[in-house]
Image (cartoon, rainbow, N blue to C red):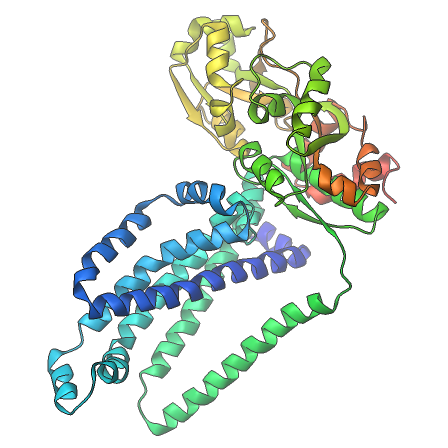
Length: 514
């Protein structure tokens, strides 16, 4: 495993450097805001003790909210991306910062404060020249803990379309690439330890009181600020000097085939136009988070499935069929969106059961499954349990009720089936692992699941501003079959190929990419 991780880091170092840069940006901004806001709050409640208990109670309450829930709460207000991640990380960073500042300030020896007051010091002078300096070691300890926690927690930012090393972790889980997951995790750990070491060094230097130490500290501070300035300039100036170019923001769901299609879009658009493409890979929640971001303009384009759009976006009842595509287009037009470039394959839901379970109960159809469902455990993605044409509708159509259910990430569901954690699994017909799984796919004998043809949803404003984009998307019409997609998914998930490479290779084989 370690050899695989090392090989991945060396061969794809540019990829990880980009993620590391994004991780540092998100974490650094959150840490700075938390230090300023939390430090001021801690000082204020130490000066006005009546406000201490309610303030700490509020901060403690916010800290107890699960991170996934916090991100979900914030998305309707701040959308997907870095802004939401920074807000969430700042909220979690406030507790250790406020508590450390308050503790340090209130634990200063009262005799020292009385002496300072007796010598004629004003309240402001006592605060700035006595209490804060004496409280600084405790405050620095809080900053160290907060910084390490924030860097580690920033890994979850990828769930809502923000960048950072969490992208590598999440992609690794989704594509069955343990080395990718491990590499992202190790880099986060190394970054956290490095920051802790630096802050520990600063803390140690600040405790030195000699004139020589103070002179050295001033020099180090100036040098550090200069280094930060250079780093910021190197990051910002090239972007300012570069010739402006329009950027198309593409989003993908946390699925292997979506990673592949996102890279296909990037390759073709950048080859055939002067547009640049920025891909936000694996947005957690899929359609439920991407589509609102499309309407708000955070994203411009993403691959979607017709049946999903019919049920989850347009909120239509009843199963979708492809002869209703005109109605689907009309509904999306009202939202300022269009379907352009239908790939040619469908990724329809299905149900698979462990082979031993199928043999034990003689299961061949969904109707057969309904008779014994109460004795079995079903696993599926979160999306399936929430959608109108999902779990509840399936149970109603077949008169079945499973003994229990388990919510699973797309990348983990076949592992759960193989380990016996679930007996039945909601699958996609293009799953790369399906052909290798010890499972039996059952027949949908009442034809419950609707058609889920894959195509691109794009903002009409972008099509108007860049009419050349339509021609590029239409080049993808009918280019991929279900077997083609299943094979590409297999190459990523089982053979360890990168989605970028698989996408480019397929387009070259079809003569679409030079």
